[in-house]
Amino acid sequence: MTGVICGTGSYVPTQILDNHRLSELVETSDEWIRERTGVIRRHIATEETTVSMAAEAGRRALKDAGMDSKEVEMILVSTISSNVILPCAACEVQKILGAEHAVCFDLNAACSGFLFAYQTAQAYIAAGMYRKILVIGSESLSDLTNWKDRSTCILFGDGAGAAVLKAAKGRTFISAAHSDGNSAEALTCSSRHRRDWKDRPEEETYMQMDGRRVFQFAVKKVPEVVTELLDANQVKAEEIDYFLLHQANRRIVESAAKRMGLGIEKFPMNLQEYGNTSSASIPILMDELRRNGTLKKGQKLVLAGFGAGLSWGASLLEWQL
Ligand code: ACO
Image 1 (cartoon, rainbow, N blue to C red):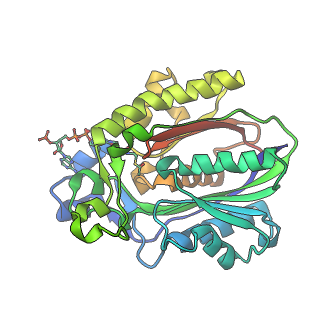
Image 2 (cartoon, rainbow, N blue to C red; image 1 turned 90 degrees about the vertical axis):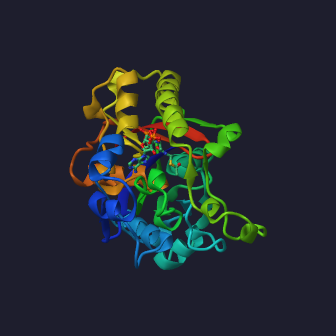
């Protein structure tokens, strides 16, 4: 048995923060941000929370799948920006959706989170433990952003995306995933709940990043892990219709395409509209491509995530909707 995506959904906040407005908050410019990152605007949660966005994306995905919430056997929420530490966001989503039969837990692998949650769901389905799983990536990164730090605040945005996986007969693809805790300091964010927080600089409770290091890591590891994935499944890069990469920076996506010797048209992007939404970026992109008719039954897709940890990975799937 393999997990087939039978529905997608997403939600982004209505409040928009564009580069021009941002340049009134920190010393930067629309030109600099567009050129270095590709981002033009991002959506910022005001009324919304990580949980409310996750629930709405999940509700839309279930509607798309034609599945009642009571049928859902597992809810996985990938997030680094949950409203509260306890209970987990997935249990809150369960309550909102009335998915009373689901087993629920969160997963934190930063920008690789949705991908790792998708792989986890596939493993549960392959083991025969669950047949209907709702996988969600949801982030309110604006809560973790230091709005005085121009090197990071230009990058991030808020939103949620979701996919419903259903067990079906079909080819099970081998996936690829890696972590490197030795490089953890490249991208960090301390908990405000740490016992020693009051003695530490406030900046540490926001995302801090060695941008150049993360950039170099991403442009090297993404092509490597995609090649590993394709080799393991004996699929050629030319057979892939679309590569859905984590939407961190246009230059990272362009560099990955170039290193793989593939046309950029196979690498759809929406980071210009949403910025980097961490674990929500891949499912938001997937849902947009489904809704605008880009994705067609039988197409082969590669999903690739990378981010804090450091962590990175890729999965291959055949689109069935
Ligand atoms: N506006 C204007 N100037 C700026 C800004 C800004 N917003 N930010 C930095 N600068 C300046 C710097 O001070 C520096 O000036 P200097 O040369 O006088 O010292 C200059 O611009 C160049 O800075 P760099 O950091 O070298 O710029 P770079 O081209 O590397 O771009 C960026 C920075 C966009 C952050 C890039 O490194 C990047 O995208 N890194 C990857 C980030 C990422 O993708 N993270 C993903 C994981 S996120 C997760 O897991 C939660």
